[in-house]
Image (cartoon, rainbow, N blue to C red; front, side):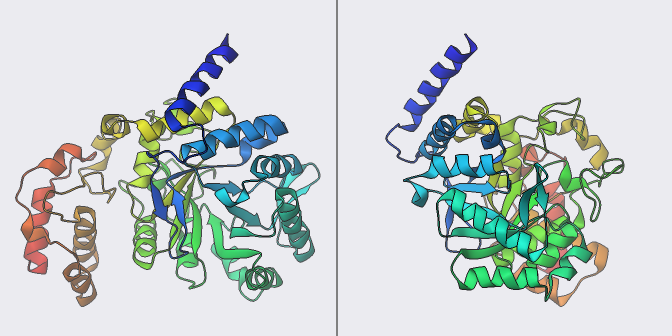
Amino acid sequence: MKKVGLLILSVVVLMQMGCNHKPSNSMTYRPLGNTGLKVSEISIGCGGFEKLDSAASIALMDIALDSGMNYIDIYDANPITRSNIGAALKGRRDRMIIQGHIGTIFKDGQHTRTRDLEETKQGFEDLLQRLGTDHIEVGMIHITDSPEEWNELEGSPFLEYVFQLKEEGKIKHIGVSSHNAEVALMAAKSGWIEVIMFSLNPAFDRLRGGAIPWEEGAFDNLQAGIDPVRVELYDYCATHHIGITVMKTFGGGGRLLDAAKSPLGVAFTPEQCIAYCLAKPCISTCILGIDNTEELLTDLHYLHATDAEKDYSAVMQPIKADKGGQCTYCNHCSPCPQGIPIAKVNELLDKAQTEGYSDELQAQYDALPHHASECTHCGSCMTRCPFGVDVPQKMDEAADLFGK
């Protein structure tokens, strides 16, 4: 009966999407930084393909493509995973932008990270061969989670190989994956990283400094708001047009969907987690780990979800008391009827009040399309703020400080 129900659900969803391989009109596409690529705002991860056979992989890809998804992340070096994705993309490779990882191999029966040059070459050539392609769009340097690891890349044979792959056209753009905000920011400022795969969700945003989510005690002392390093990372990527592709949208293993497992002690829905990430202007796509057709269909409900279903402010109310009415620059208050970029104004104000006023902050404020002085105190922003920030008061403070 469960299989029959799932089959019926699949048919209904596919009828809504259109079964002639036409992208759904409800899918939104975003720039992938400065790459020139436009990617679906939600995209597919590779993990589930290991558990499928070729036919099931093709069926899963059918639904993904019919929904309008055009981006896939392939980090797993498992030959089963890669071969199944290759089979699923056969004859339609041009419809999917591939983010493939460099520095990942299958060794001793498991997926393994490597920086050994020969292993790296073998792993990458295996990826191309199993996918049945001569190139991938984004070559992602696999997992760099400490500043020391990032610094070791400079001048290394590994990095020279990555640059060589780009020169040869086997990768079109260079990216890096990281769970560490400090490393991601270093990568963003390097001048040669075009895409960053980063772990982002309402819980991870409150980790302190360079904390790694699975480190012991990582969630014992969360930030009151979004970690300042993350704020700088998101702002820098938005300003410099570096695309961020989101991993761990649901907290890793779906932890945020279960109150008992959630680091924040409350359960979010998939729609709320996705909406939280996509509220940030630097985000290009949320990559969702999909284990089976049922999960994919559930996650695709986001495309047809109402604003109320996407609204995460209510579920964050229990957290709100601990956050002291502090702006976290989440952009949930937008849109402002006057066009004021509220989150950016608050960010500049907070920096000026904590670090001191500067000409640089003034210049950034002056460059905004609308300013705090245009606030009419309508209060619409406050009805949507998850943290109870007195936005009109903040706008008054900003207008007094910056002069308009």
